[in-house]
Length: 167
Image (cartoon, rainbow, N blue to C red; front, side, top):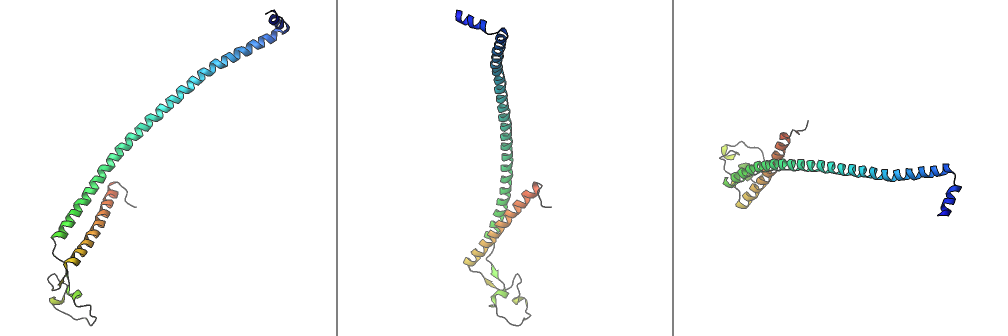
C-alpha cells in the first residue's frame, strides 16, 4: 500500500485530474450507451409493430378484393353457363340439319340455270337430310363455336363493367 501511495506522489496532480476525467468520461459513455441502445431497441420494436399493422391492413384489403373478384367471376360464369344452357337446349331440340339443293346436285359445274323454288335454298326446298352422325358432328361444332363466342362476350362484359374498354 505504501508503494502505491509512493507512486501516486511521483505522478503530478494535473495527471491525476486527467486520469479522473478520463475515468468519468468512460463511465458516462458506458452508462449512456445503454440508454442509447434502449432507445434504439424501442424504436426498432415500434417500427416492426407499425410494419406488421400495415401488413395486416394490406392483407385485409387483399381478402376484400379477392372476395369481390370471386363474386364478379361467379356472376360472369353464371351468365356464361345460362347462355350455353340455352344454346345446348336449342341444339338438342332442333331438327336434323338439311343440305340445300345447291349442295345436293353433286357440285356439277355448268351454266347457271334459273329454276323454281324446287331448286333453291329456300326453307322448304327439297334437299338431303344429314346423317345422324354428321348432324351430331355439325351441332358439336356449332356448340364449340358458341362456347367460344359466349366466353368472348363474358370477357367483353367484364371489361365494360370495369371501365377498361380500349380507346
